Length: 485
Image (cartoon, rainbow, N blue to C red):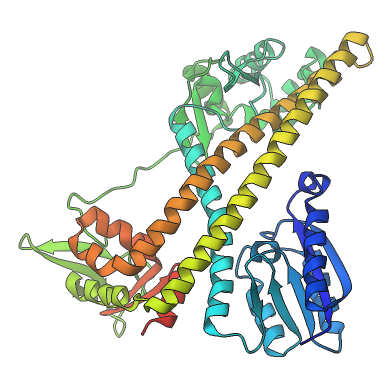
């Protein structure tokens, strides 16, 4: 057993650092080290997200451990303080196998050495999976929330020039016309639609009009170029090539917008995606490994379903593979997901522990956001006082107010997503265990839509090479396949 140790304490935000979360972690880790008789030779205090592609402070810690001539105990509070994904695992695995380091996860009561058994490694794997699953769940909730807002006609970002972000009587975020800028933005469209004025000429004119952006900067030609192509002004939001009607006041009509596009000579076109009349289990879910294209399903004599792919030997030739052949291979995978009862007990215990830790993480994040929101309220009040006293100009006040108000909108959305994420995370845990133990039975009793959901939940990639199905299982399901009978 090594007598020298390195402590790692990490928080994700500056607010958590100021809330003394780092100090609390360090005291806890020092107490643990003392109980084991370790001598602490280095303490790393890290304020960074473990989801970042670049983690310079983490890399410095690894370099320090590698420079030592004897085995080092790396002590962390929980798995998610060290990592929230598998990207660091190969590096840590290598150090453990070389007997250069042993990992001590204090709250999980798990120690990883080169002699660690399968249960200890499983607890580590599951800790990483659950940490990543929680952040993925929050990310998915944000995406769903944005999609829902767009379909409801709600804008999700900084209001375009001529509008401003504010709150309605119920305290909900909304967008209204900016009385100080709206009529000037409308003049831009009117002038440009005549074909008489270039954007450069209009840009020079805006300076005489006194038109500035929300950030207090002069309007540039690039800003005008984006502005005249933005359909928001006549009632439509454009997000990643998709159009969504919004419910806010319009500044111009569609006819004026289209006249501007005729002057600019750049109308856009959108194509709808075709769907099959008959619903198939594997429609759009399998790629041909030969051509790289989606495999097309077809039905013969009203009952026999085939998947049309390319012959690996002769790519110019089509192959018709019976759907039942592919489904049989999927069912083989389902049966391999069986977990022995003794290992399942370890996994479930690990899930329970990690869920408790994620609940702690969830609470700290909410406290941090609430603290920041209250701080913004105080700063907004001070800002108003400075304006009343004449200490700042109206322009500076408007710029700072818009910045802080925009951040408050973001905080409200993040708080909502943390509440949804905590709830959905609980659902994800129970669904995962249910699928692992009941997948074959569930699949056989499901309708086509339910079968598609099960396949989509389990697999991240399906490719057909002749009759051979190639696949990748989503995390953490490959862990269960590796330990199955």
